[in-house]
Image (cartoon, rainbow, N blue to C red):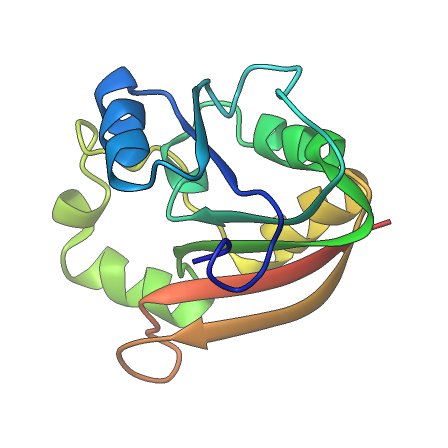
Length: 152
């Protein structure tokens, strides 16, 4: 999508070699790297935009994602992030109904974020949060959170 919208280069990376190979086959004009988002240093800098959709909740060290994006972006560039929504009303609803299923100790999600925790970590890692929006499902029981931040 980035290449189609005129960005000079588009680079993606994933921790899974088969995912990287599949992406490279599907999009031969883009660069794909086998790399973990939790391992520094990240393999490039000077990017105009970074996106991380539905990744941070799977990380043992989520702050490393922000540190890596900080390294990869040029000053003033933007970072877009999505993660499942966990606000007060939704957490109370989950506690009353579906706690064990949602917070499954063997499930793929190991971190759960609210707006304040994401904002705090982004600010601490050198970003200005420009927008936080929620989407999907019902008011206060949102499915997800979208954040737009700018590297300072």
